[in-house]
Length: 261
Image 1: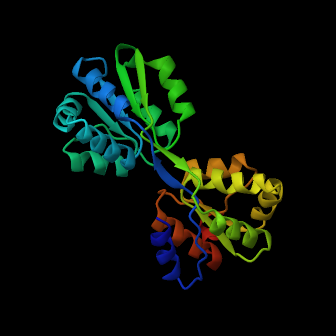
Image 2: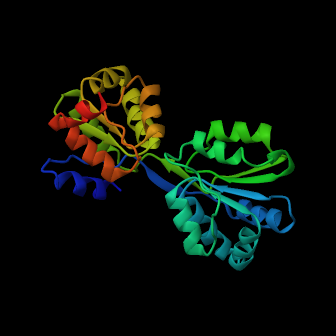
């Protein structure tokens, strides 16, 4: 992801300082996957919600370790599968599962809940495949709305094993050496501030970012920044990396402010 974003920005003639802010760490989830397959087969779950493509791919990989991949595929084809956005849709399609129920852009928790609201969930059991952390807002809403909620966390978002590149980026921001900082996920936001707060300058980072051009790939990422006191300058619609880079270029040319101001 960082390499792809960097390449897109370089094509616009800018210099890039890139720092990985997270890694996807596997968790021991074989038992959870087995319980999901059992629950689908036994009719406990009528709706399966997938939030990320990584989660879907991990689900099938772990099912294969159990020797139950075909059983999982058969089960998912019999229930309603709802994917939060294009990546889980693509991962499910690759596995052979169609998702006729669509979530509208920008694919945030609000749009997902809107789509789920079309079903009488009080009569349904729901299996929720989380991303690298628990989606508290979604989980709490479903707990009160459905007959039974089963959650799976198949991987975790963690800090990189080597945080020095990230710390170097923070120092560059604080020294005002960067014209813009772009974020592609809420986890990146949380991790950069986790490091800053551990070093004792979280509030200083927030203040400095508010005098730097900040881009967030979408509303979920933007909300994470706002939670840390940072107002993003560029939030593309639709929430895609290419559009974010294009909007950043427009911002520095003045066109973004004109068309959106």
